[in-house]
Length: 115
Length: 115
Image (cartoon, rainbow over all chains, first blue to last red; front, side, top):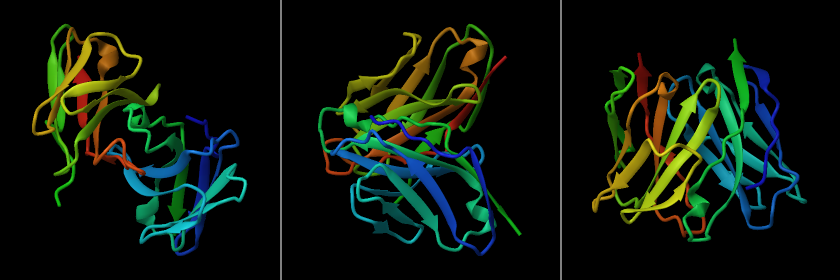
């Protein structure tokens, strides 16, 4: 799986949009971009994923650049409960060999939402 | 639909003992993966089971083992515990590792402390 690079930490004011960048310059054509977050000592929570098109769900939006070498997770109106470590992961899906199931976590971005 | 459940949530053992952790996947999910999270090494993949077969394994010693039952529930066992095995053990389930986007959903984890 391709490696990702994320800033170690970011701050965001409550109510503002939080834009979390991720660089994955070596991503392959069959690799998806996944985002998870982990609130202190809890299990990682799935947020969103995408292949090449922008995606949106009730939690966030995912913007993937046209060359797919980077992406941005957008939390449109951050709240204090969004304070967490956010992980960007790229991985192959749909292979069916079992190897697709492995998630390789980096160190993520620690997002601090403040009043 | 109920999420991934893990039991017990907290466990204290002493060096040399063994421990068994349990994971019940989301109903209908057939793949179960295990991860270890420590402050020093972060989140690391242990192994993945599908249809009662281990299909993928991380770089951990043989003291770490697991199994999956016909109802997809999974257990992991750590024998001859060492202090360094103190960690948060996370279980994740997915619907179909061969699917187009086999998203993994995590449980709350089991916090193991080895004294």
